[in-house]
Length: 309
Length: 309
View 1 (cartoon, one colour):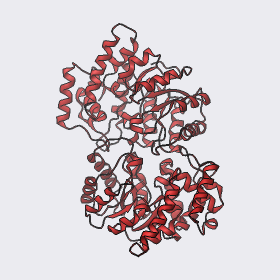
View 2: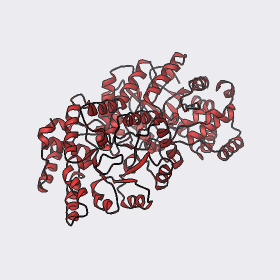
View 3: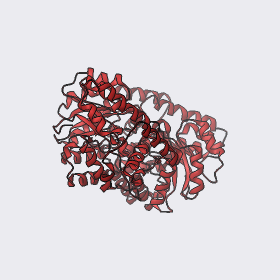
View 4: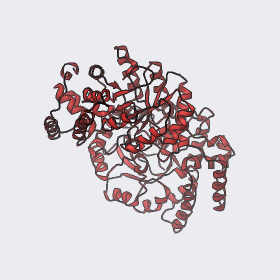
């Protein structure tokens, strides 16, 4: 990841530690962000796997302030800012731009279904115009399996044509490589295309993509960054296969609780397991099964124990 | 609708008027609420068709304060309070309880999909415990076609068993009568079952239901209330058929823009047409077609012009 005005590299939606009252545990979060940055991975804080949509706008703003005041480089942050309500998306995105964050990962408004490209264009357009800050750099967040509201190729093209210096990239979490390829085929100038997971990292790099933004980079950051850095080496396919094995293991479980259980396990810090409703943490049997499977892969997380507490 | 602590009757998610800056137009809203209340219809403000999920929590709180300060009886209000983020649902629900609103219509958190009943139970439970106000009366909001996260019969039973004085009813907007019947079959004590539209009003009343909460009651309140009041009369089937004809006409179009176009038409006030993105207003051709179809049904809205401005 560079710290120029357009991102490339590997980023992760950092998982969110909670205290006994289910409030954000900012000390654990800060330590985790530092550990991830040390592995070469940027922070797409408030992504889906950060439980972002279970956090209030106030909590998000306070957390960003705390992280940047504690010395986290804002240019390595790409906070999720897309919410259902226009005034709230504007408020959070304006704050992110003011802080000098490297980008904003922006969901479309996701409550109303079956909305038109025209309606979504107006949504993004209103946000951009109301924020009115050239520091705002938007990465569109296409994740129809969760949001149920997607971002079409035609909409991307229209937004980039209208706001070429603001709409600068996309995270494609469709899980559908043919969609990612279609974004590449659109041939947009310096548009940063991130795969929504490391499963498509090698394919995406070969097409000229910018990298990936992946939940599993919470637990496997160095190896994912290593493939990013050496995607054109002879060992690339082998590295991709190793990443896939870890990811497939995690995906046997509810992903967010599983990622938290893994960090709790390797840091020896069970407080990391907590999730906010409507999510539910893994039970003891599931955690054992998960540990067993990761062990069979020889998986570990180095340097985590010390920094996560 | 009575003003006892449990609702019955007809309510509507009042459509939301916006000014030229797309801010809530509180004068038009107040007049519209008064007109609806005069027709015997309660106000499920911040329902889906109020564009609730395009409004910020701050806007909702301010609007409720303005309406109640202007003399709207809070016992006839059932505001939507269910949001994605736990702290925001708690904040809005606590405000609604403090104002003495007759109820709160509560969506489950709707961003994360495929969540368990256990997770949803914890969500509602956390809200109830954190609000900690016996004035909070929750009507569960089951609308899987939009929220994509539903409320199962088992979850309803578990919530009512645990919080019998707080979880007091449901709006079933599944569009699936067999689901509404299953809620009836659960035989919960004094549990208020509202059909999600007037299409199922007669069936629901015959099963012992409480009434309906319907978008179309924005434009057809008196006739819907009339069927509610006389559901066991000989003309009931005929009245139901007349209601269905109007509803089916509206449903040929995007419903929220159509309802706004109808109010704009009959009040002679084009400002009513405005919607917030991601919605898009009807175009002139669509409005003409809608008017033509309603005219063919002999449909009108009396007394609206004077009060809507």
